[in-house]
Length: 497
Image (cartoon, rainbow, N blue to C red; front, side, top):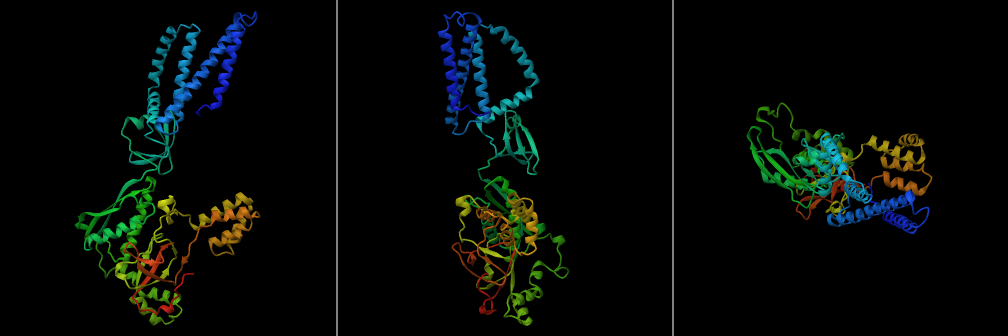
């Protein structure tokens, strides 16, 4: 129920004043001043006055309530206020006309008691809803934990709240359930503390693992940078030859917690691989190196690397030289969206972008922290098929059903998504709408580094061995690290495409 507009008070006042004026001026009139006519005029004036009083008092009470709470008054509170004022005005109006309300109140009390017993759960939820709306402990957009599951509140009324589970199903939550028991509320606009545990090898210095994990978790855009990230060993697991580590961090939103946990697992794997930290495994299930090649052995297999080196470095056409470079080199793998930070053991080495693509980013990317904006992670982006389907759907809103055929035909003669977007945009005759369409559908690309590019490294302000310029992986990226002097720098392209 919306608050009555200010203009409603003026018509109510004018109508009440006119009725009272007509009633007073026609008291001595032989027609309107006697009998039912005069009584009807007087009754109409009293009713109009009661309506004006209810509107005025309601407006005043709601304004005072809004000034005290500092927020907009809810519709539920408006219903309660205007309902009580209407009841009081009706009571006063009936008393004015001389009705004996004793019998009415006695009868209504009995009826109310009977109805109250029958509607006890509903009345309980209604009163609980009044308390929730007055205290504003639970707001639309917040999450509440129900059966250890976060349920997002999408709407609230006088009887119940409507929530959505993580799997998309809707659930009706009676207001009484939110007030009768302890309910954990997760604010939409507040950071939330989370923790994550993982196992590290028992034969590796714990502090190095703590520092490495802290850096990669802090680099996640979804982690709140205001609160520090704490990583510490919390226990030994002798049967698994490991140490258990715990990561304490804060998320910007509770809904992003699961997504962050997945990214932490992904990046820990890549960080361990680059820094040559072995993953622990149960002693009973240990597999000998002779029976199955380890990850390190597979990564250092020079046979596939030699072919990539010959293909990317035209100056090295000799298979023997390529084999030599492959044997002396090490592979460094990076997760999608991860900043290219080189391991300490490779200080002084050279790096060749072997597979995947990377894009330039500011060394201190403060855009998410300042502007509260961030690009989606790789797991949040649309895949190729979904992106092309969305392109056809958006184009069909402009040019009609022909859009799907246009996208299909253009796809046969284009080789990239950006080229496809520019091609199908030519179907839009209006230049301004075409530009808006392209800005909406195409991703903003910074300078891209592709396979075959030499990547330099230097110490940044935080002491890390970072790429120069600062790069992030677009998808999974593989760098080939080799000792300085192994290759002639002039034989490799030094500029990104």
